Length: 476
Image (tube, rainbow, N blue to C red; front, side, top):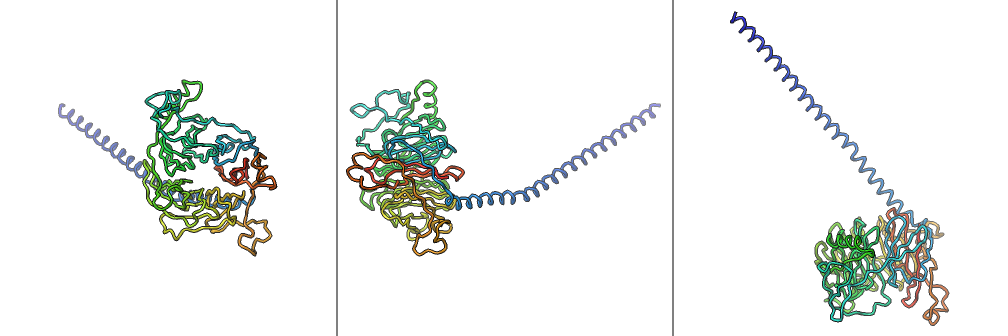
């Protein structure tokens, strides 16, 4: 009997083992089936990715072609709408804040925001240097708050700033900060966007006016001055938090004072050192290089990351009145405006390969230049807007000009717009020297496209330094 029970028990155990083995086999099969299905899914995804990736690339290229096509056709259909700026004197700098507002700086040292839809003008308070006593040390003012936060002001000569104004306005890459000139045009002022609350003033670097500014990162900016130096400034997190704290605690916004991180002089060994004035800056983000143009007719290239390191200096083919500079990221070239030419240069190519094109307006000078897609927009001292196609290497034609297709003289049929009348102050200077002249062209000192590329803001004023006036218009 015991033997029978033992046999039954063994038979039951054997059956259980067989069932467990069968289950393991089923689990193993299902696992392999899941792995196989997973691999099939990954293959499907891979194949679909191969199908969609060219489609996405095609759509991206199509959008790029469409932008390029629009950039080439848009200038011929632009129409001007002028704005009244009151009695402000000569707009030197401008940048779009959004689709509706443009921030501008003038010769009369006024910073304002213009609404292109309503025409409303809003003035922005200028930021002042820290107060100094007779020995040049900073006084304990409310500006900046924390004494450890304030840096020592340098003792420098105070020159007459009458007639200088704001020559540069630049937004950092994330469009969270705006840099421009301060109440003292030797100083760098930084505002927070979109509120335009004050952040800080860099007031211990330059001994002469700031002519140009370029952001090399979200927190670091370079200023170029008429004293021949370039200052590197950093807006640290501590500076931003201190400014935010001051706004929370004070009813009147306060701001900090910062010192330069580096101060470099442009080379002066090749020319008259008194003419080595930094006039314009442009940054190449791909190579972290900063281009600078000086009034002695030289182009200088600097490595610009956490410091400024000189790479090269090149004599420009047209070296009179080099006052504007732009960099075309897609084309890897700098465009330099001079008295009558726009010169295109690649720093990695020999100097003799620099290509120049004439504006055909000798004597008035190129006053502003910019890249949008393959079109280089040129603003002149005679109030003209020209459009150069860098791919075709020629100025755009006016499709409505009767000489299109046949040109008796060079420049016939070139698309050219002229700015409106603007406003001119009939003051003592005008009455004494210019009253017999009926009209004055408004030099295009600044122009900028909005993000869509369909709106072009243009501003300036009379070219003669003794005349007081202004012009602003939206071309769309």
